[in-house]
Image (cartoon, rainbow, N blue to C red; front, side, top):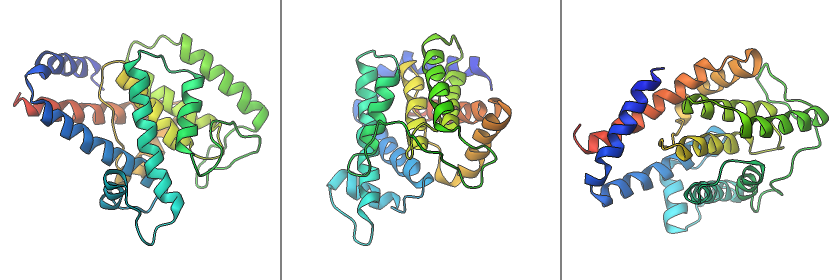
Length: 243
């Protein structure tokens, strides 16, 4: 990962962004929001296609043959992402209250959200088993303490750690992946970078990168994946200015 190159491109974009047509930036951001919601829910098994997700979010229509939970998942994810943007616009640092709020929005009309689990959970196919409730409470407390005290000047590494550590702890019975991807983007956006979306087609590489951290505390593979996705975002926006 060449973090300095990412910073160079980020600074370059900040210099030229005011010259870009507002409608172009707005339309790209709307497209990203749609694809991000689709990918993040599809990674967890949601069967709505990109077009069906668009119909639900933009036209408020239900989709025949899909269960209500899948409809709520995409609606809630989009609302949670807008909440993240609102918090960042207010200059709020990521903390426990915001993370619980994100989860509560994600789980609206599905289960009671924003409440930590008091049961054991297992992740099928994973070598890592999330901690039992008592140990989970200890780890999540440490996570929030580290979140406020950690001094990681490399924003990509900070975002990668925030996601990987939180999902390793798995503090909720459901929705940990979606929450983790939202708080990863919270860290990126709060520090002037673009949000990123892990394509559902790349979920195996994504899961393997998270597993490397959960089992061996190796953050490099996951941080490199985030850096690559961030660079793609920066290149797209710079491409609007033909740079």
